[in-house]
Amino acid sequence: MITTFLLLLTGLSPDAQTLSGSALAKALQSGGFVIVMRHASSPREVPDKRTANPDNVKLERQLDEAGRATSTAMGKAIRELKIPIGDVWTSPTYRAMETVRLAQLPSPHPEAELGDGGQSMQGTSDAQAAWLREKVSHATAGTNTVIVTHMPNLARAFPEWGAVADGEAVVLRPDGKGGASIVGRIKIDEWPRLQ
Image 1 (cartoon, one colour):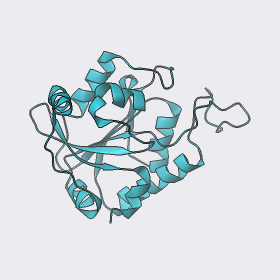
Image 2 (image 1 turned 30 degrees about the vertical axis):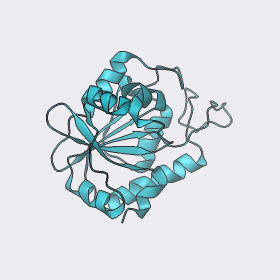
Image 3 (image 1 turned 60 degrees about the vertical axis):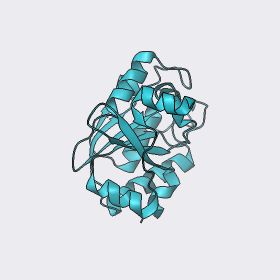
């Protein structure tokens, strides 16, 4: 009952059809979905000058080896599956931008509302949660929107989702009325197996 109330409060349908595997890939190939994901695997510690990637000049958290490998494999799978990607919105943090870059997602738009405000793993504001809830309610026909953010942002905007693993994506179908239905979830290492 509480979960249904939270879903209705956030505009998400509690009775959405859940797809997986090739059925989910086929749906994504037609477009019209929003793919909301947590950035790929990243250690909690910030690197020092010796261990930072050469382009990580602000010494922000960056992806670990698993995060780099799974981001690359996810992007390759999206291209091989011919899943059309339109708008890509991302946190401006290094680890989120690195996820997008390694996946080779097109023309990312860094958005402060998706960021962590320099407060890694800290809570986010109500305004950020409202921005994210609004963004998932709109999709473009024939293409899919991708949003890359952080666990605190997801937890604040969508507490009913529970934990979202590193790199995990929640696929939503906007209803055209300001709401959206969850149609599936994809762990980052599952993308290559969607065929």
